[in-house]
Amino acid sequence: GAVVSQHPSRVICKSGTSVKIECRSLDFQATTMFWYRQFPKQSLMLMATSNEGSKATYEQGVEKDKFLINHASLTLSTLTVTSAHPEDSSFYICSGARPRETQYFGPGTRLLVL
Amino acid sequence: TQLLEQSPQFLSIQEGENLTVYCNSSSVFSSLQWYRQEPGEGPVLLVTVVTGGEVKKLKRLTFQFGDARKDSSLHITAAQPGDTGLYLCAGYSNSGYALNFGKGTSLLVTP
Image: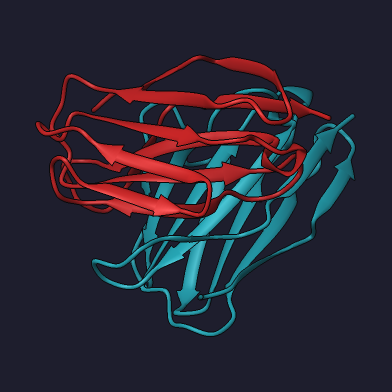
């Protein structure tokens, strides 16, 4: 199956700083990448959908200026959490997909904001 | 938003027991997927069901898609500790791109 990686796997930062998370499709070209957030003991909630070379589409309630998404190539998407606060602490998961095909999920990034 | 309701939310059983997890919606889905997620990891796709009434088997796991394509079930026979994890059902939204996830069923199988 297709492989998606995320970096870093976990990150701890101070409140007010920005954190960048990378999502890479290792053996396929992901025309669409998705970013999810998962709080403890809860399900995955879609944050945004991005297509290569286009602006991301954000779900209702997700601040686009706080969660900056860049999908500059078919194998890399980045999520930057700007001015992070403790309530942004969560498990962030990305997935990549080719057109009309299954999404392949990354291993997730654990963010802890102190 | 097409909501998916999963039940039960939590399940703790002993090794060797059987169990069934349900995924229900008032909406029709072109397909439903089942994932298993272990703590600190991303979800892993187990199966995709597409046809109403379809039954798929994956070793001790049996997946069924309802005739009306609004619900699905996952049955595990003779559960083992390795089956422990969060089981999620998901269906594609009307746009066909985004996945809507159920809230998940957290399964604990004790030896």
